[in-house]
Image 1 (cartoon, rainbow, N blue to C red):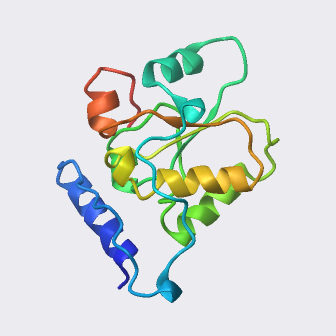
Image 2 (cartoon, one colour):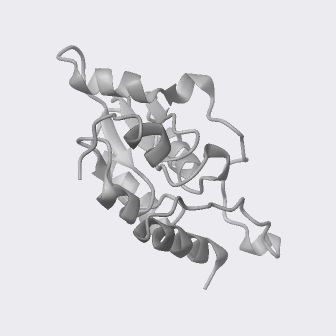
Image 3 (cartoon, helix red, strand yellow):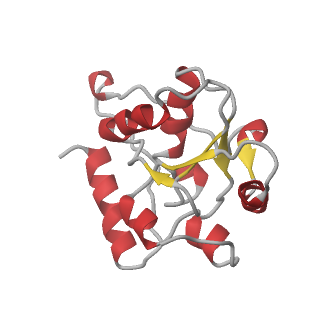
Length: 167
C-alpha cells in the first residue's frame, strides 16, 4: 500500500474515534519515478486565495450575489460528522479518485464561478488535500477559487467557534 493511501486511512481512522488527525508532512519519495506531480509546499495559501470562516458564513447567508459552491476535499468521516452547511463532499484530493470527483463536481460551471474548498483534517502546511484541489481547479481555468481559512482543523476553527454546521 502506498504512503498516500496509508496516510489517508490514518486520517479516516482518527476521524472516526473523534481524535484530531495528525497529518504528517509528506515524506520524500524513494525515487523520482514514484513522485506524484504535486504543487510545492507552502505554509499558507496565498492571501488572495483565502476566505475567513465568518466571511463565508456571511456570504452563504446573504441574499446578495452568487453563492459559492463549497466543496469538501478531505476525509469523508470529517464531512459526515459535520460540515459547512450546503457543502458537497467530493473526496480526498490527495487521491486520484478525489481529483476525478472534483473535476466532475465543477464540470459545466463557468470558469468565473465562485468556489470555496476546504478539508479541515489538519493544519494547512500538513494538509494533503487542499493544495492539490486548489491547483487542479486553477489548472482547469477557474479564477474565483478560495480556500477556507482553517489554520488548525475544521473542529477548532469552525465548529468550536459556534459557526453553523450541517450533519
